[in-house]
Length: 77
Image (cartoon, rainbow, N blue to C red):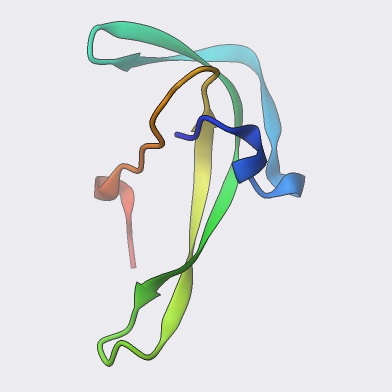
């Protein structure tokens, strides 16, 4: 989840036609866009020399949300 639309890759932004609703603690929040994001130079190899980018897919955008969230359970090799 991101809180700033410019964090998406420009050509990956897809408006949500029927607003998705997600539950955060006890608050329902509307999702307005989905897309992809690249976080650059964040993954290190075992030798700490091979630095890679992290591609996140199906990221949601929520207006006025103050924290960016990544769910680690969905990461796969």
